Image 1: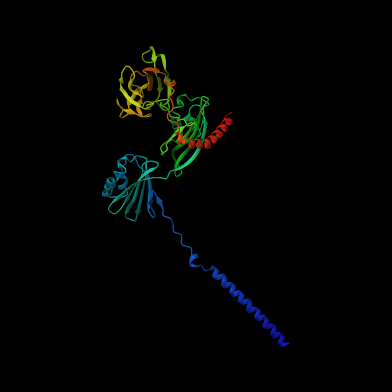
Image 2: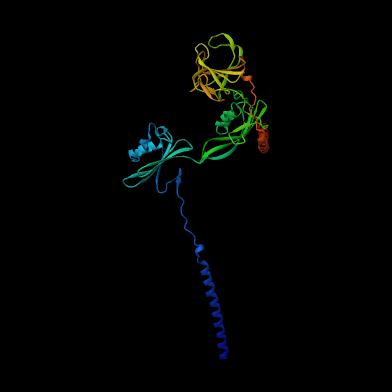
Length: 430
């Protein structure tokens, strides 16, 4: 009996030892699993440096302010205890990059500096030339370094469509889009549509880029595609580089014909026609009826006047009892144009001056016989006056035949999208 009891105790002890062995082994494995090998050790994350305007500005204090009225660069820097010798170095080193005398009231500047209980030491000074460009200066122990920079510009693609009620400008503005798009569209269609004669019910649709620096929209990028319906006629515009070696993009219709023609539709942007071409018009100053072989565009004094085509200045003068300050341009063996009643001539305009289409030749005024500021614009064909509003100019170079397959792909890809949005727009307006 005693032997049986002893044997049972021995078996229990043996089982306990086995269980203990397995428990110890288990916890040893769990502990070893938690131990990190050299390959498993995670490196401590190093904080990224703070970079602004391409400068590492860690641990520096930073002030952002605007240039005040009549404030010069020396005024700004002496407020931060920058020695005059360093300011002089900055002015000299900056001459090739930026003329510091041209800092403008309202533009932003940034000062990065170290400060203790008694001293201020400027490390960097950055002046924003405009929305995208800036000039940065670094102050070293015995010198100053200077560099121009440009902020990162991002693009946001947009579609916009609308219908004319009174003007293109107001139509775009009413949709809270940048009204400068109206100017861009008027330039694209300058040879096809008379924007002084837009009618209620005319429609448009376009695809373009908005340009941003950070969260701020700074302007309008390229218009890629557009469709404008004017007086029941549709005008497509596709941006395309018509050059086998690269170049500037131009605008073509869906068939590959250029939208740019020999003459602009009008020599002014955004005004109104106050008097049309006539063989018997009542003169508001002379109080008599006589021919008026031109078109009067009423516009504020100082509005830029553009030549409607390439040409050479053949006359520049002043008619006290007539057209006041005027310029006459010969475009080719057939056409000449005359621009009258200017307030002043553009810089560099003289007889023999060769001009390109769109060049500014003068500014709207009321010189000569005029009751108010306007441009009297005239076109002569083979020496005889013709109605400027009835002139039709031939298209210039179409898409190059070697590039036509690429252009066709562009049109085939994007025209259906334009047409679809256009049809949706028609349904909505109806």
